[in-house]
Image (cartoon, rainbow over all chains, first blue to last red; front, top):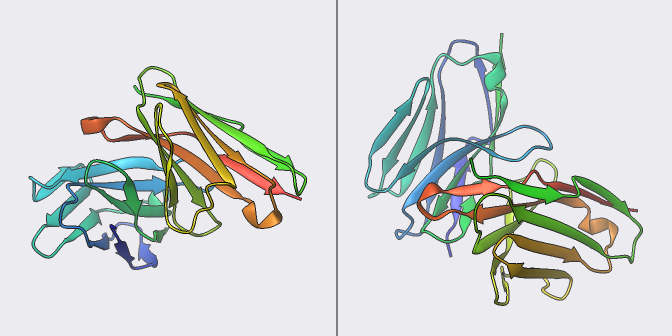
Length: 110
Length: 114
């Protein structure tokens, strides 16, 4: 089955700096790669997603890149703000179940 | 937008009792629901996939007799934790597949077994 690895597990940045989180997946049939932000005790919130027919997608300060050959995808957050502090999860799906990465705790210091 | 309503949001039960968690899709038909468990500071681990009108498919290591899943209609899936023990205390969350539109999550249920 699908296995998704995520790095780093924790990430601390200064406000205004960029943050990058990386994920690798094992199942080459996976074709949908969402990123979620989760506050403590809350449901995951979709922040951006990408499908396998696209190499890059951007939404304001957030971007995701996908390398199908290497089976990895990355989340880029630019101009980080304290409110970006949260746990971020990548995930992968081939149209059925969604498998999550291990999570990254991002802390943005003012 | 698509909404999945999950109840209860939190529950405390005594060891040995059973607890039922409901997930209801409010404005769309969810033919497939996924149930996840999340321990503190850990990821969401898929427990099972439930399809309307058929038996659930459980992930390896998940006891199907302990975690009973019923998906009797296109809008309702339930997870029953039977004979709960303190180690079952966790955050349980459902998710409905919406095909090309991705996944919609319930708000989660915090289960504490005492």
